[in-house]
Image (cartoon, rainbow, N blue to C red):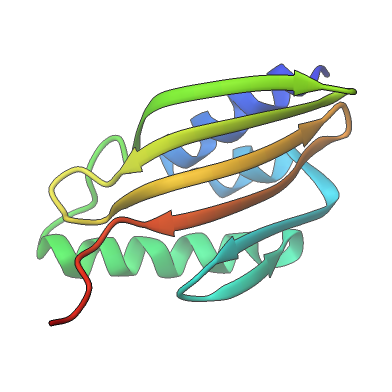
Length: 122
């Protein structure tokens, strides 16, 4: 699979909230760096996604949105065999949104660092 194919599968997994799809796109040394949770390894991505779904359900006060996430403003750059992608993501019906910086190789998605868009406390 190409890096682009891995990125497409990864993005679709997040929009659908499908842990199996996300896992298929990951390299063995994958890490997700979330400022609220810390670094998440590949083996823990299913648990992380379930906790995210619980947080979304709580924020909405109703069922999960379909899609779980919307991705936009996707920019990519390939350099020396590494595909770097940046995107804006949002969970419909909530104020949960932010950006992600993703690194992908031919072996799969290597990493993602996310940030949240929020107001600072006054």
